[in-house]
Image 1 (cartoon, helix red, strand yellow):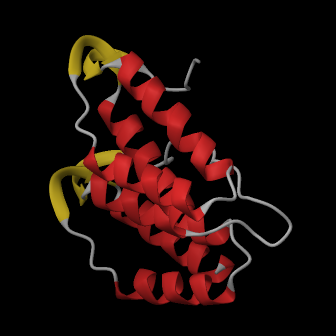
Image 2 (spheres, one colour):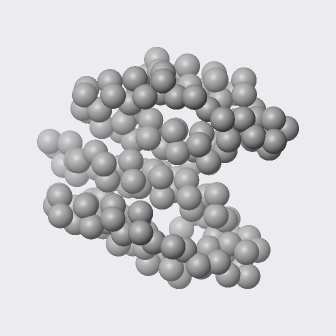
Length: 157
């Protein structure tokens, strides 16, 4: 299985990541709460090994956050949810920007809520998005771009 991750130096072990995502994507597509809970626990407990050549850690971490969001929300009445698409965030990295990991996990949660039809889930995510306080780091995502994307997501929720 080829995942859409960039291969970098000192990245995550490709076989381990592929094996983990195969198991998790199967659980996301399943209609079983037990499989979903097991996959959620597996994602949280896994410690990914680093190799000389492997998948880019930031991409894999963002995909894990997206999968956790998908596993937190059960399938719609018409059928189970599909694994979320892995799309990199289109923000410019600047000096003194928002913490990239925090922004990625926040947007993964929001995109997971947008993928559901649950009004309760959307409302809870909208409240969490409004209350979020993003940390600034020496190297992070552009503040203006992230703020504009947050406003856009709030309108969508």
